[in-house]
Image 1 (cartoon, rainbow, N blue to C red):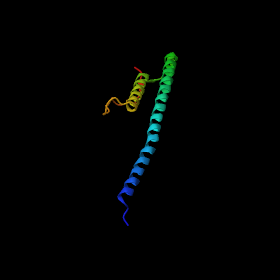
Image 2: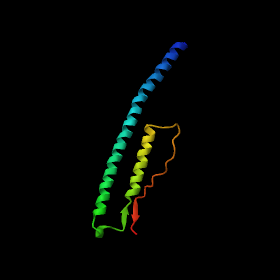
Image 3: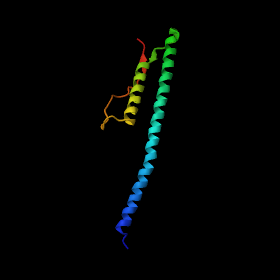
Image 4: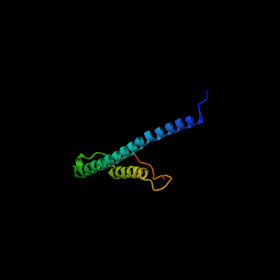
Length: 110
């Protein structure tokens, strides 16, 4: 026996409604996690600044051949943070490319 059209529509409507209701907490969770990641980036930036100060104050005889590029790492952290900001509060419909993260922080001393 075929299912009446009205019953079918109500069933489909209920399924779609439940899908939307379960998607909303997932969206809120993603935003919460990204906000948490931004707070962690701030902590990483603070740790990098403390390490940079320690490196500047270190004895020159303890400095090795290579050094950590704090400026590039800071720039990459700012790029990542700005990308999260743009995702959480988009100002326009299409995302834009802001450049790649360098990823190479080991430099040779001159």
